[in-house]
Length: 445
Length: 161
Image 1 (cartoon, rainbow over the protein chains, first blue to last red):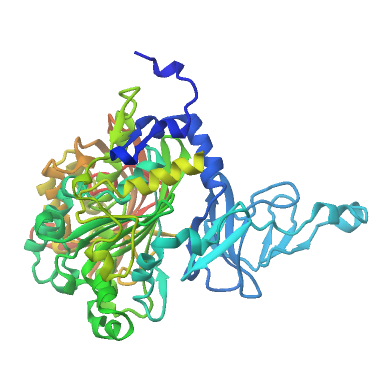
Image 2 (image 1 turned 90 degrees about the vertical axis):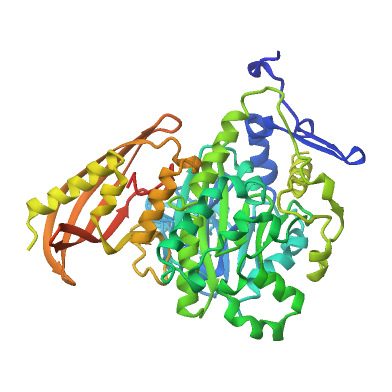
């Protein structure tokens, strides 16, 4: 047996066994545990591609900012005095001190806490304290004192993405086949979407890619979340009146998989879709607006909006989840076996109070580290991380769903007039994962 | 009027019942119309304050608490099996008069939780209670839990906050 301690450096390509002609797709578990691979991911994926930063509703006014990270780089998104949103490296141009001391806030002037240099919300350096007395004529020009913007900032329907490398395809091209599925969430709000107050930030002692897989993994729902379904079903028997109507949770879609339509898509560029018919779509917070939506969109699109729960997993670390409630989730790698996860509830502006309340309660039921579901997911992914060390040559053979795989669109995809690279008429499939792993291998080279 | 001694006794009893995993006895301390609320953080210093429009970490009625016990006892929740050993430390108990007919009680809390997979986790915060005097003794009608840890490690549930 080869010891795990004397392995030579592995290439990403050696960890993916992709044989399209033989219809075999395997991933070596070292992809989740190899430190050198992790370092390459940071440089080739997180420093060279579009990554989610936040939603425009989080920075509505001049000086509003949110501080975040792209890969290992601290950055912040800020609304300038000219109304434009920019993203800057979060470092003073003087000696590198981090400028934002908070995760979010408002500051029309950012003052460096170290030596007092000031910057306005457009990133222009407005004060070099003592500069006139101490610097020569050309010194400040040479330093270029204004804040450094990241190479690219793009918005798709209010969702902000940033990129540290100028040499990448436009955001629109990157989102590509995922756009019609993002639209299902964005277009349901005539007055736009807003991120609700209330944050959640939690740690997972597992590799970030396990969250990418888990976000689109329909196979674990009936096992890991059986407890969620039985718990909410039990709760509803205790207060059938209080938890009726819109507040009723869709336990049935978890427990009775065989009775509902479901599926998974590879929509290209590493993006994956997983969907399932809602157990009781009329209990969804958007249902009262059905007639109005039918006037604006095709019947197929409205059916997808209202009657199908969707998880839209964007490469490499973003999930738009529109199931019982609506959630944005981002998972940021910290180390090969440590990941920070953040979630936000997003909702249509001007939503009716009872719909808003129901959306929030369902969000709390599922999407938080204090919920009835996420803790079980985290534990499951941590279990995979630990178990992935068990075999030095362990392979995950992603053959689940091969039997039903369709190249191109299936019937449900045609209803939305989209053509995935592959479709699978079932939720308990692993074939959408090919999208992620192929993009991953291509990026790492 | 609820005395500091009575309030301290109630909060200590609740802590002990949780640490001893006596869930039904613990639930019995809650009124039928109880609200159990852990707001979420907003930025670095604030918490959400409107459960109808903001997201909370937990916002439950008594049925929600019962469901949590169902979840814990069923053995089907991966995160909850095995359950950690916990020690709730509750201190600085003060009674501040009445709000909406309920005794307003505050306290500081810290919970040390140990489970072999995760090791020891300690988190803490403040409690704010609304306590009702009944013929059967004091009952918790409202419990608001401020959780200070905003980069949450491990699961959060009724047994470890």
